[in-house]
Image (cartoon, rainbow, N blue to C red; front, side, top):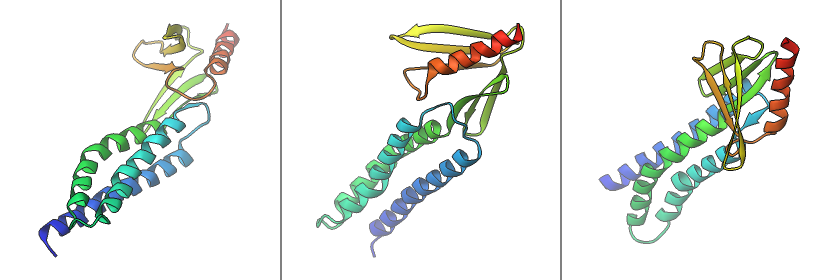
Length: 173
């Protein structure tokens, strides 16, 4: 075995393991912390799929090409540059949800959670239109926390979500 072959095996194993561990983490996060509401499942799934294709499938296919492993090494180097970007995007998008719990809007992203109580007197719900799509901003009473939902980038019924938030505000009055 040459040093290039050993390096190829190590790099391929690292990429495969990174994709596998990310997929396992996403599955556990979605079982424990995911709540139905506003989410990014479709786009996150696309990025995870592209990461697996670029980081696992493409190098395996390149090593089957009969050129002494040169195309496989090139595919691995390319994958080492592109995969972390795609894998990070998939983690961020698949481990994201915004939902209503009692009288609070909650945003969960990976390890962080923001909670804004809608029944507090200083809490704000701001509406805006960006490129023809609805943008909702929830701002906490102390103006330190903000949750922004742009209908253009999320999945779920944003209009129904807004109506539920307005209903909570009306109950307060």
